[in-house]
Structure formats: C-alpha cells, structure tokens
Image (cartoon, rainbow, N blue to C red; front, side, top):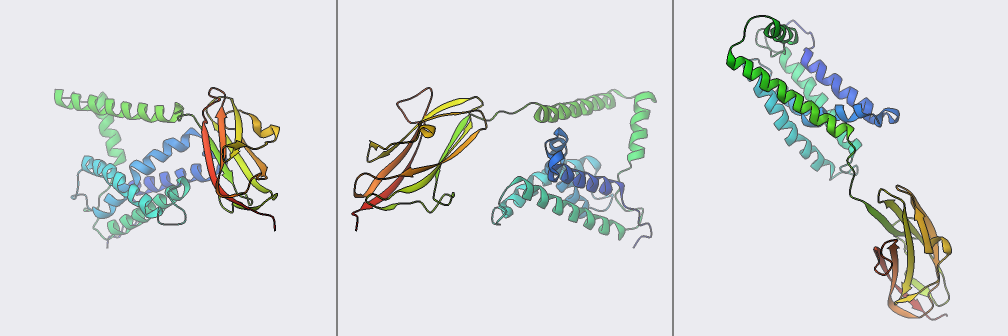
Length: 295
C-alpha cells in the first residue's frame, strides 16, 4: 500500500459537487435557485458514472482521459435509470428527493471505494487528474508555441462543443418550459381521500363528497359544474355551480348529495364544463350507488 494518503483532487471535487447539489436540493430556501438545476445535471448525467469508472479503473494505464469522460456519461445514463427502477419498488417511489438522495449516496460510496482502491497502488500507477498541468498546457497552447493545423482544429472543435453544452444548459435552466395546460378534477370520499365513498344510501339519507378542481391552464378559467343521478340533475350550491379560478389555484369544497330515487347500481355523474364549451363536459367522473327503502 502506498504511503501517500492525500485525497485525489478529482475525487474530492466530485464529492464536493455532490454535497453542494444536495444542499441546493434539500434546503427549501435554495431549492428554487437556478443553481440547483445547473448542479443537478452533472449529478444525474456525469458524476455517478465518473465515480463508478474511477472505482473500476484506479490505474492510470487503464483508460485515457477522453475515454473516461465518455464512459462516465454512458455509465451515468445507465446507472441512474436502474436506481430509479429500484426506487419504484420501494415506498419512496420515483420522486425527485428520493432519486437525488439515492444517486448521491451511490456516487459518494463509489468515490470512497475509488479512493481506497487507488491507495492500494504505488504512486506511479495511480490515476490522477493533473489539473495544474492541464491548465499550464492549455495556457501555453494559447500564448506559447505555434500549433499545427490539426491541433488548432481540434482545439476549435473542443471550444465549440463546450460552448454548445453551456448554451444548452443555460437554455434549460433559464427558459421556462411551459407544460401543456390542463385542469385537475377529482372527487374525494368522506375522509378527504380517494376512498370511503358513500355508495349505499337509505331513501332520504345524505352523503358527503369533496369536490376538487385545480386550474393548470396558465390563465384564469371559469367553470360550471353539474351533478346528475340517472341523467337527472341534482341541486348544487352556488359556489359549485359557477367557479372561477386563477392559474395554479385549487378549490376543494364539500358537497352533500341526497338521492331522490331508489334503485341499484345507479350512475352518479360529476360533470365539469369550461367557459368555452358549455354543452360537452370538459371533465367527468362517475360513481355507482345503491338507494334502498327506508326501514
């Protein structure tokens, strides 16, 4: 085992980026920053693969620098979906915070493993990223010795590729990506969840439902609602007959239903109309209820 235990600068930089990304994701006051997205892209697209490649190939003779970069991206694109698939079988499911947390743990574990593996190698065999040498070489190439035509073309291609990458990331971060407009319309049971619906009534008995409407149309919307039992309209309070919601505004209101007829497997319809089409329901939901005779 080598005596030099200095933490490799590339692994330290990668670990720092992971921790910094987690700070911007997990702390609410920072989570709305554009920096969060800019840091999140490398965590998903590069760092997990780099950590894995660093673990698998701790020696400098294993892979060239460009090969490591390309494989890091390829392995990240492979590993992150596998982590997401594994999360889909857990109570946390595939959500942003569990995914970022799991990818971060995987990346830090791989970086620690890569550090241990490198330290079992002699100093002359360890892979390292010579940041200072690279900077000096780049500087000397710009202001120093003349370049061949091939070197010049390669440098131009590299710079253009880097600028395209930066421009793409900046566009994704800075330009809002509007989702397709839509309206959420749902009916909840007596306990405010999507179950425990009242479906069995005695004549004259009432049941309570909770009506939910969320406007995601990117503009203020007017709605009208109708409730029908076996195609016959039931009375509704004014606040549910005519509804106006701003973008991102949500309405959740209780609705008491008293079936007026007896029968089995009767269709109870909740119909939502928007302001542009008042004859065809924009959204509709159905329940089947039973109404028996009063004992």
